[in-house]
Image (cartoon, rainbow, N blue to C red; front, side, top):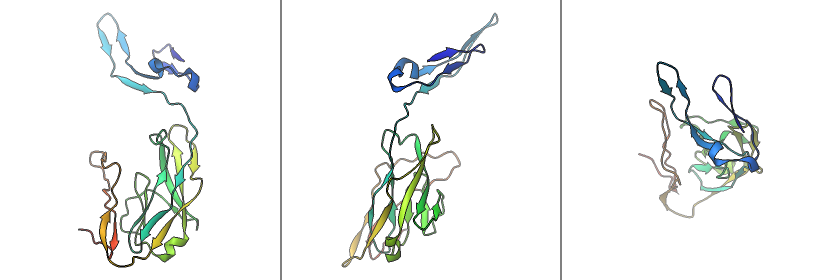
Length: 194
């Protein structure tokens, strides 16, 4: 499972789920060196062994009122969400939509993989979208089993704005980095943002 090389490095060998050992594969390691002059200790290295598991990616249809912003989400099982990231959305027309920060256009893919379709109209209801992901540990690329689409509804009168609340509202931002704080709402007439 683990061997120390001649230069002092630890070599972790691949293992099956049955051979997973918490004390080896989910532990903290430090390198300790010593000579006649003194001793030095490295920083802690946290090792987290991961058992590769099969998973499927799904996209569910979403309802949106005409003129509002639709949000399609790539559903990855929770046991894999830490290791899988969305690399693109593919429209049935063949158009590829990649993560970006261009908030002004028709389509926006956020860093968390959500696809925003702005100013949704009747033409958008005829398109379907497939989510493409990559497993950061294995490099395996996987697309959603079935495409998702937006179902555009026409409101039957005035509708008070309603904000679509996110499940996770905390964002981690790299120093001097850029992030997007989404504020997606639906209403009729279409709400204006301030």
